[in-house]
Amino acid sequence: EDQVTQSPEALRLQEGESSSLNCSYTVSGLRGLFWYRQDPGKGPEFLFTLYSAGEEKEKERLKATLTKKESFLHITAPKPEDSATYLCAVQARHGAGTALIFGKGTTLSVSS
Amino acid sequence: DTAVSQTPKYLVTQMGNDKSIKCEQNLGHDTMYWYKQDSKKFLKIMFSYNNKELIINETVPNRFSPKSPDKAHLNLHINSLELGDSAVYFCASSQVRDPGTENIQYFGAGTRLSVL
Image (cartoon, each protein chain N blue to C red):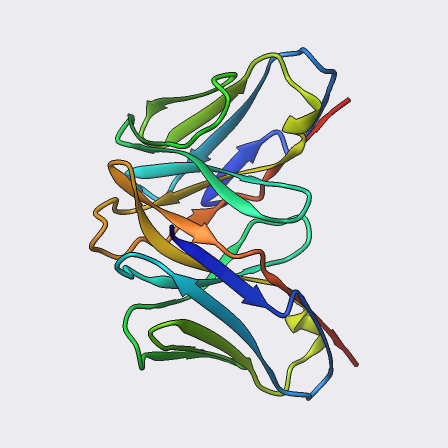
């Protein structure tokens, strides 16, 4: 069964204190691993897609990496505006189409 | 101009009522989805349509019925609402449905349903 597990559930950082979020997955044939950001009261906002082990993508203070079993979202020198819930998802076959299988997310709080 | 828009944003209703949530996307995508996010913030797929054809139908009560009048709209009708239906419902859309290709999904802001 396709499954996504994220850790930690919650992470508190001081401004400038770098850290990493983990996403481990089991999926029959990875067709894409996705990172989304979700702010309170809003829908998930797309950040990155990764397709193959060794792939890396960056956006501002965020960098996503992928291995055969997990993905990391590295946050370098975070700012308070990076506070949000970060969701990891894998693309999996469902019926005649595909859907995203999400983890439960990591809620990041960055204080100044 | 909002890419994926849902109405209403909030919906408070009594048990046993019937309600609908509407979704529209102006991205020109051919596939649309409904997800449910429970109180623990866990997002789970419910349905997906491609060009008005139902292609994903997860195990949800048949009180939930999606309808797609055209590829830019996907509505969700819920009959005989129950307390357990309280959640946030998200609509999303994407360009492709081929399992072998990229499938970036863009989400609406959500509809918070509260059943009293």
